Length: 155
Image 1 (tube, rainbow, N blue to C red):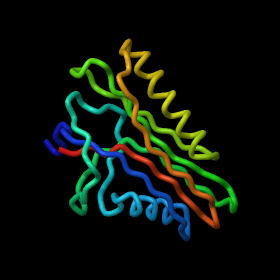
Image 2 (cartoon, rainbow, N blue to C red):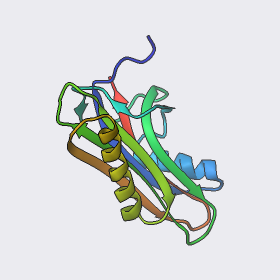
Image 3 (cartoon, one colour):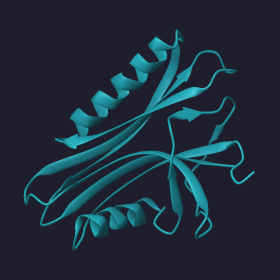
Image 4 (cartoon, helix red, strand yellow):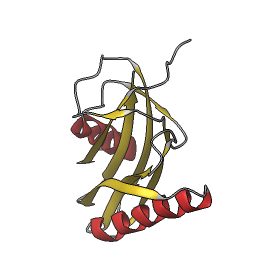
């Protein structure tokens, strides 16, 4: 098995300017601390009993599962934001749900939207929410910018 069921997770965020959109995105990954890994974009579940930890250096080149939101823009002066939220159920034996959202607009607006999305997703599952945690980042584009937020899972 290449990737094991994660037992740890953490939130990261970053924003950057770059020569081209991909360079800006790469800079945001570097600022978030995951720029030297191979992110595997995943759907949005944190396994039951997974422990939140502080971000730590990941092995360079490692395959890293992450639920993430990102946005790039080449409109000078435009405000862009990315956010992720995780809704944790009252039942500890049930998985938590991650939602991701990125848009033109303020960090506060984008984060409020993703928090509501996480709550609504748990409601669709028939689960009561114990808590919702989120992170968001905002960037004002100078020439070519990116914003990135993620929940990183690790064994």
